[in-house]
Image 1 (cartoon, rainbow, N blue to C red):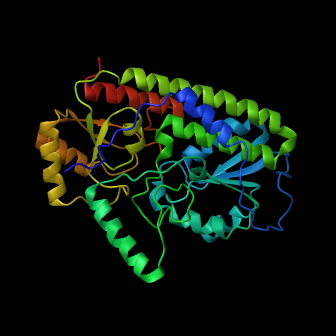
Image 2: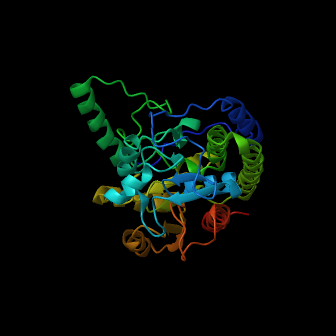
Image 3: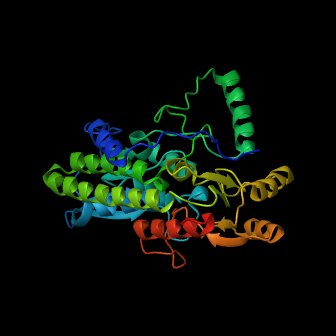
Length: 346
């Protein structure tokens, strides 16, 4: 029984995809909450635009695109697993002082709630710039189907899983929020963040546009490296701690098998572990990957049982001293090297 959907998409040229994304994102819809806390773009004492990011992938975009014109703070400190983040009353109150908030709906329920109540005028929601897909283990989908049926009975809601911004992002866990692990989707989000910063701070719009273009070029190069690096491999299947790499797997024609589901803290059943034994043997899997921020106990036990190697595949939810690089691009290239080794790339 497979963890990820085995459907395959036609390979789309990254340049064509990014160009279409840029055109589609020429107009950005910002969430206006009627804040009376000041004029957006006034910035802090040094004149910089005050940007609050929900966690590292959003922080990276804000810093790279904003450059010297922004002051970026993050709600998720290094070493904190973002899925489980709770905000203190002080942190929630400080959120209202931001000029711009950049976040990803559906990953951190406490953050979603705090942002909805913040009253900040310029709120930039990452999943609105790309499409979401359903990933996870079969156990995820069984739980989600039960949840959706219950929600339909109680609320008569029609859940559309193909709509990127339908308001049900964290109500249905099958929608995978890990879009930043696909460089093409991440570039679409970068385009949207750049447009948002320019609208919030029009005096520096030209700088934001130039920085956005430069970052998209870097992400396009990264996509090309993954495409070439994973073109020829002995196996296309890899095992991970939790189902974070669904978008990456689909982009490059791979197949992720996850021990846990979308939530890294979920516990696999005995049946799921038996399935992984079968998959590892049938698909010639060599490596079980664990992460830097989640427990590696189950992954190591599974690897020991199967006589497989272990390695690190970083979902880039935060940068720490244990990360295999100083920023998103460096860690993604380390992930590529790890995948090439595990999959027997030539």
